[in-house]
Length: 332
Image (cartoon, rainbow, N blue to C red; front, top):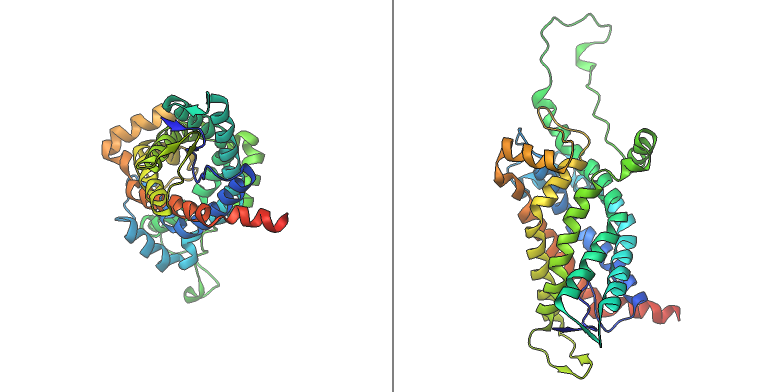
């Protein structure tokens, strides 16, 4: 049984105040997204591959992306994450704290309380996570769709039409890449606010189990080998929190990868040639099983583990350094 002060939330140090947690969570999110976003982009593109295999794996995807789109092509969609990651973390951290306080009894929080608190935090964050993921996926996947087009361009079966322009000067127009602002305006015009929340059920189905696995696992790994004195538990050393965050994050990330694949497929608006569209979670699950087999549900699992583990490691570093407390000290 873990003490109530041992908060099991993502990035949480039980000894810092809520305002400091929000600052730390925002800083950790910004730094973490910047560091691991290329791997997340590879994850999205690998998960969306159905028929045509543009990429053989994570490294092949990153190499081809840099070759065709430049280094910054690996950061397509990062601006959306960097903009919304702070409110996402703020909602998650604040919700987790509230739920843990409500579920604590006599300064103690049982395992079922930790699971329920994680469930509540995961549910609340979907308000920001769904539109963030919706926009990010379209921007990340645009390069994969563009890479498919040259190999599947329709062949000319009739002779060329007369032209006043010399053939050597005719250049195909490059495909127009979507922007977050353009996508947002288009979705709001065509589908209203519901357009930005396409796949909300699938996002909820992924984030809630992730939170229910991660939060208690991190708290208990972080508490191993430490003594509890009255109502205060010894603070874990940096290396233990770092390892606990990496391990719990990786395990939770791999465990919910099948749900992440379903969410990614449902939220992807533009499909490549011969790729399925889906009417919902059940239809998506059935079609993937029928066409690609059970192994398709593990696409991007390695990428997810490589994304989540550093995120939690970076977050623990931010908490250990006391960035939030330092900022509040300067402001105060």
